Image: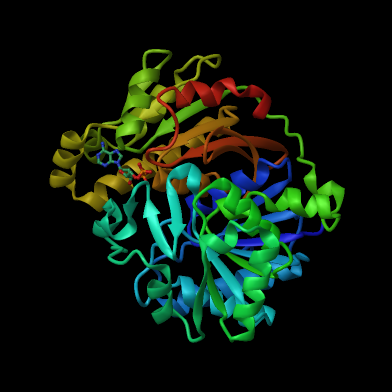
Length: 422
Ligand code: ADP
């Protein structure tokens, strides 16, 4: 159907987080990995394009965002959302402001809002200052991020050097007075020429008010949480065709595999909780470097069709460091990613249709190897991790793509148990 809302996200996990929250409404949400080649087809009411532009040079980020905008407009989108991280990850040359201005120019709009708050995950904004749980952003672990160290908590100060037009604030006292008061404040700021408005939000109720006040804006920007109420608001207002809130049903074969290339603390716990429940193979990067991946492929081919194998490179930090010292960080990572990707392809050829994958980079490698470029978003397994569906030839496959610390200890069995969702 014709797209109503078009979203552009600056990385893959941000895109799937947004897609999952939009899909909570029951809407059909389609996630595209990169700007699709060719004109829009098989479009959903909600389209999310995952770019990889958080730390790209500004001109590249802007040109990719423009290409995404053009595709979404061709799909028919009337509302647009620019999604970045809830910790506003960017540098002074950062891409959040420049991409916003490029989208505003493209759409001919004079004002947008900035609301990265995500109260459910401990991100809140008060008087324009972003907090991570109870700490100001600049005192949180984000201050030491390797690529985007956040040394200031004030969103107006962070945004000002990134944009050409004035930056302002609609504070919590205004938001607390409701959506009409917030609309008035946005109009007043607009008359003063303020193009970029940071909006405070400390609780979910604030996001509801902000979404209400901004539902008619052609372009909103923020984290995923402020977008969550929009499908319902548009549906109630009658601007979203009722078909827009219908998800497609998928029928996916039962055979499953779990592939884990993440070494985060939570993934280590998840592997430990799952590895005795069925056949499990631990990949040894040093053995892979010496002997290649054939042994792992042979092990997979020998498994019983009724079982759900687990193949993991997941290891404790000291083991990972030892391997990295021997092989180098990049070589070790690539070996594992290539192996898990090849195993996914072999499993698919053998009839496996459900893939539970742990690791952000690992997920990228597996989806690419499986030739997946569009995902239909299904029910959430854990907050931020939905089952996703993709067409592969004449059948559907299901993917659960989990980055680092997401999910509970029982995530792998949780995913496999959600059969109605996949
Ligand atoms: P996360 O989402 O937890 O960051 P990623 O998949 O993004 O997980 O990144 C983990 C990286 O570590 C991948 O490049 C993966 O190939 C690599 N890796 C996994 N296991 C090992 C290991 N045992 N030794 C060294 N590198 C590993």
